[in-house]
Image (cartoon, rainbow over the protein chains, first blue to last red):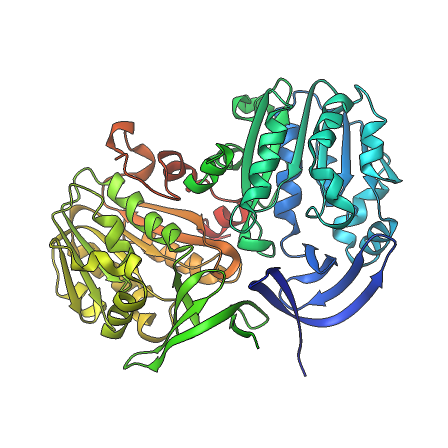
Length: 277
Length: 277
């Protein structure tokens, strides 16, 4: 017998993967959490039936969330991650020697617990001395923070369930207040093939709040359409005007100095979305 | 009742799409050919169970095969497409005013016939006066051509079935002979997530034949992993050294002057594949 899981990424399209073990299938206080072993992608975390991360392709998302803003900021000492309980973004943040403190605010403690158990190569960095982990509502944490962070990264699910507040104009304004005067914000903003309106709305609302707003993309095989967008809002620094000597030579699997810039070259139909067409 | 088709893109992973009509399901002289109507991607052509093209996302592949080499060559008058019986690459080629003749050599006449019937927005250009359509073996056509074409594009299936000869060193050498002294060749060369060895072998063999060899990528949602590679071999011209005024301003949905260059910025793990790592 072979067992296959299917994620309907839209009403009429999905991905399907062979599963060899189910480690966890649990309704937490906030969402359905499944941790499975797949043949193609290794261990895989799903929230509300959507693939969040897998051992095989996790590096793309985590590198692209972290290294673009951290290389854009000249001295990112204090960094906040909202969501991201699997710890992958934190692992990448810690590659930057400027970072003195990285705070993770994850609403669902079970995500952290099971990631440490079943995704140790991703979650291992959560135990680093520079990291503070808070199990709390990221929306509230942002509302209570003022002029505090150099970089804030929102590593959320799609805007269903607990993440729905994280795709609002009010939240982006809160992020702006929580950042220092030269702070940078980045969020995952879904895909332009199936969620055109979501990408357009997020870009428009972030642009209304930040002087420099830019969208970039990366290929993630287990995410809908394989083309993921990230929207960066910055008070001062432009990711396209970073000097070559700012880039650290640490090891990566996806991100490079060239990708840092090329990721902002958008396919025409994506460019149109950012221009409200 | 809802009907879903599943393509196992690897032994353990696939995509699945809801189908509303099956227009054709036929074993041709060369391969299994299916033409279906999907809810998410419109009409879809499958060969040997693999998605070849869909109405919704076809523009990515066809634009990226055609416009990169045709803008790299300063005067592409005579162009050959091997495979590509759906006509999408031909449609894009005809946007270039320099092109005087475009020859399509497709081994399976049924692909052409059913594409004209069910994919008219893709195949319509096949009736253009500048186009010659030959139903013949592309491998043989190349073997019989010398110093003839400015640009040759290989728009084949993956190397199973009739396309197996099109991924060989001998074929690339034949391509080189069929090209003029400043000719350019481009082929689709599969994806780096699931077909690492294929990408590596194709790049190495093309590089052994052409002075300038470069790999570029594009996002195609219905192709395995969503990240597709194209390998370009050129006798003289470098796609990264094209003057800005060479680019035509015609309408596209994916390709832009910025994408032309950015597509060659490879994710680190893909760069490693081209370097034989």
